[in-house]
Amino acid sequence: MLPEAKIFAGRHTMELAEKIAASYGIPMGNVIITDFSDGEFVPSFEETVRGNRVFLIQSTNPPADNLMELLMLCDAAKRASAKHITAVIPYFGLARQDRKDKPRVPIGAKLAANLLMAAGATRVMTMDLHADQIQGFFEVPVDHLFSSALFIKDIEAMKLENLCIASPDMGGAKRAHAYGSKLGAEVVICYKQRKKANQIDKMTVIGDVEGMNVILVDDMVDTGGTLVKAAEMLKEKGAKSVRAYCTHGVLSGPAYERIGGSALEELVITDTIPQTNENPKIRVISVAEMFAEVMKNVHHHQSISGHFIM
Image (cartoon, rainbow, N blue to C red; front, side, top):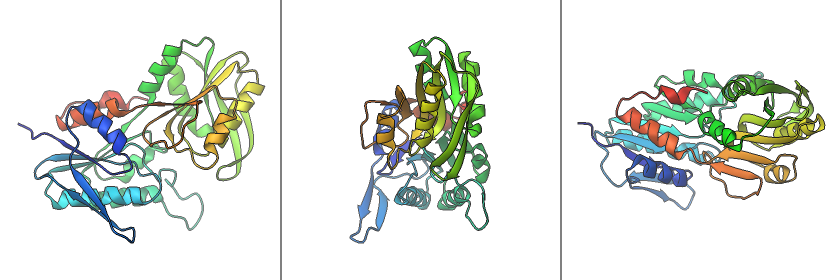
């Protein structure tokens, strides 16, 4: 008989972790993270994990302490003789650093993968990686989940006529076509040119959106510049309405103000990253039930392939 799994979390993602534990049907494990006056911290498991499968939940968006907390939790679990250590990372930070796009720069995503494995993670579970190839940076199993199952149900519930799926850039074309196939909708692509990071120079649309209800789909929204510009352009091209579905709500800098004053009817995100501000145009869908189901299947050695389908 399998020993029951145990769920612990870092401080940054505690609210989501509590929802996951409730959906899983077990209480949160007891871990204490003590802060020193200089900012250093140390986690301590206040219950035995010897021989157990432990799920350690933490998104690794900035500040870097979030990643460091997860690494130290992994190390503590390894040294406490946990049998399996699964790092559950709803949002995998540094994922945009998946390659060298110019000389003398790091590959941050690979570095993070190396650190997690060195710390003791025997499995990684995450959602909507910015680049699929990051799975290959790990030498342990990676469960890569997609939010599309949740988003597609939500889009279908709106029963929009003349539905059109749009990608805000060329890199998201595959994702847009997957949504379009599932929803039986037309697909258009926005083509953008950047002067530098987070600053768009030009944008145009490939396809016809006249009279269409457009849904923009992407893996993340950071400053909101791309989404806002895409929404404005699509409205100028004759779109009846424009909404956006983005898995990870990074929402940094002027994002909230931009979204609030944009042509977007609504921005739908998940709770992979906790939100500290509110905006009437932003709606959050929880991924807790999906993660809980996959975690339970992993623990009981059951199939999880249905959650890999975009």
